[in-house]
Image (cartoon, rainbow, N blue to C red):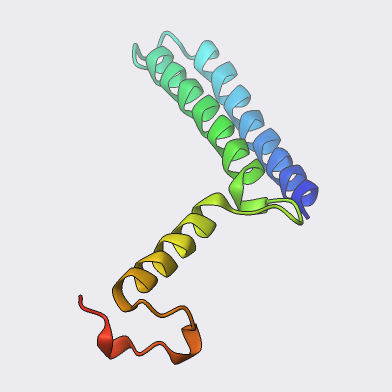
Length: 104
């Protein structure tokens, strides 16, 4: 599944970068019509590079973790919540935990 999503994202990037190359060629062809064409295409280039890198980091990172791996943030938050319940109530059996006894 991870490779399928990364492949589809790569195809999408090829499509977007293809449009950018066409826009860059037109900007070169019509550079005498406006002084803003070159700075705008430069800003667009930097923006596309940033979005491409961030997209691969997001898709290749925590969202698609491999089987058997543990999400550290989720496990830490569950551990902290269970320790807080134990400190407040002193009970270790979660089935008999009465939430009315917890002081908020």
